[in-house]
Length: 104
Image: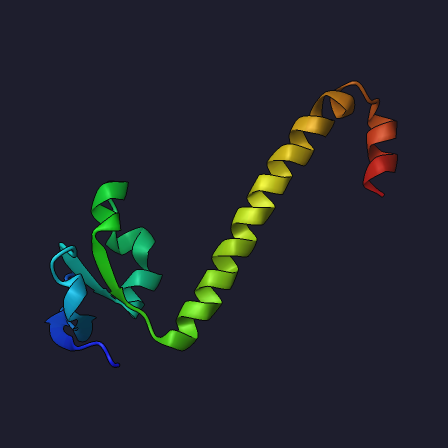
């Protein structure tokens, strides 16, 4: 069963986009995919709570790519933090020569 959608305007550029009817109540703003991609500029000054209430009209092909990128970024950030916390004290005690050898 297809979800019914309605036409709304992007709150940032005015472009007409689609929004599933069931998302209308929870969304305070709407964003086209292009404005979402430029969110560093478009969402500037907004709190996380405000950003969480934005409906984004994202094409399905972009959604899977975005989810994969976000997952990879999150995993790298978590693993880097763990590796760094384990190695930083050891690296601080190393000489410059030892550090250079370790890097190469």
